[in-house]
Image 1 (cartoon, helix red, strand yellow):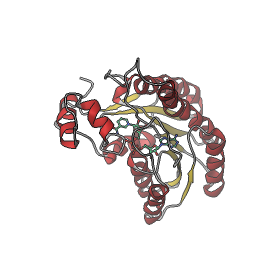
Image 2 (image 1 turned 135 degrees about the vertical axis):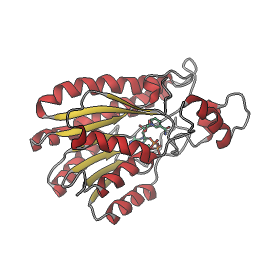
Image 3 (image 1 turned 90 degrees about the vertical axis):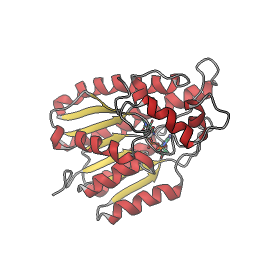
Amino acid sequence: MGKLDGKVAFITGAGRGQGRSHAIRFAREGADIIAVDTTRPVDTVPYPLSSAEDLAETVRAVQATGRRIVARDADVRDYAALAETVREGVSAFGRLDIVVANAGISSPASTLEMSEETWQDMIDINLTGVWKSLRASVPHVIDGGRGGAVVITSSLAAVHANENMAHYSASKAGQVMLMKVVAKELAPHNIRVNTVHPTTVATEMILNDATYRLFRPDLENPGRADFEEAARTLNRLPVAALEPEDITATVLHLVSDDAKFITGTTQLIDAGGAL
Ligand SMILES: NC(=O)c1ccc[n+]([C@@H]2O[C@H](COP(=O)([O-])OP(=O)(O)OC[C@H]3O[C@@H](n4cnc5c(N)ncnc54)[C@H](O)[C@@H]3O)[C@@H](O)[C@H]2O)c1
């Protein structure tokens, strides 16, 4: 018996990192998966987004569990592509129960010096992209009439200020009120909506030079060890970065029946970082 037997989950940003981890674990727990990620580069992001091979690896790993997956190259800024992918998945699997709006970018920059494009790409992907993901998918959950669960991947940055992250923090804090309003609107349908707020997670979003420099402005060419030294001071528990599976454990809890009366909440997974 899996925790998600017979259910179908739509996950954005499933090509790698946390999104891939959620897809594989959900499949192990009995769910079929509808996945999107994008290979379209975003010029203001200082590290590469997922490749076609990344998404193909997610497909392979989900299928290896014995579950089914519909995976498409779709950008969360493209409502029509999201809606088409979800329609295709629901027609293949017959239902939709769970939505995880996980896709996101990071592009550290000073508030008063960043370009308009840097600000706008962030809001378009991390905030408007979440709304588009919900708009394209949740009506199918409502139509099922069986209730359901939505999780939005926010960040510790929604509640804890760090320099050079104004656009990221604003987008992640914006997700919280989006979540709360939607939680209220969907409660009569027995659909629960929550946000998770991870601290540093060891994925390509932070394992790159731009993030190393953000954490270590005191060094000219900081590397991963230098970053980890600083990250350990952000987290109160003795850890530099969590693993994607650590976030999946909480996301799985929130979308499973174990959390059947938890809605409208902000779940910190921050190793004490907000203390
Ligand atoms: N890594 C961290 O330290 C950390 C901490 C807190 C919150 N988060 C959040 O966790 C979520 C997952 O990030 P991750 O850590 O797995 O990093 P990641 O970069 O490995 O994964 C993010 C995924 O989103 C995809 N994506 C980006 N823009 C997209 C778009 N426009 N359309 C479709 N897909 C897009 C990327 O291709 C990538 O596969 C993000 O929302 C991120 O902001 C990450």
